[in-house]
Image (cartoon, rainbow, N blue to C red; front, side, top):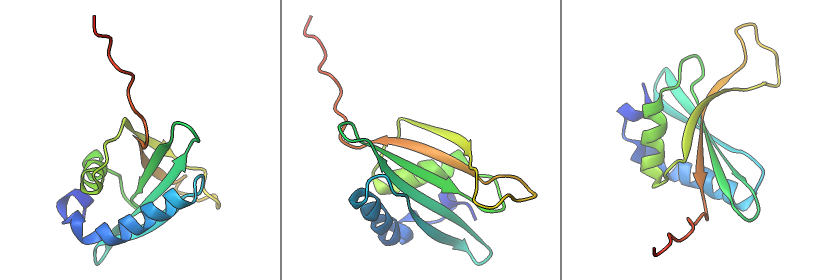
Length: 121
């Protein structure tokens, strides 16, 4: 079942734990697998990039099925995050698979970014 069709709040403790782990270890990806139904699930990854302007990268992967933009939006909304952009991406994978490389939805979320003040005139 798609992530936007279930109560994402049920998964918040494990998502927060993975997010905290990623924030504590910049540059390393922290993954969590979420079972959305007995036969289906998604994998969510978090990675913190940058030193001055930090960027949180959120990965969403659905093994054996297509990822939907609504799933990523529901995930970000439940975590209270707002993405700059969400793009589809293909991974390299450790093992070459006959059905092709893994696919992801990737969201870029600013962490400590503050827009420049607007001019008064």
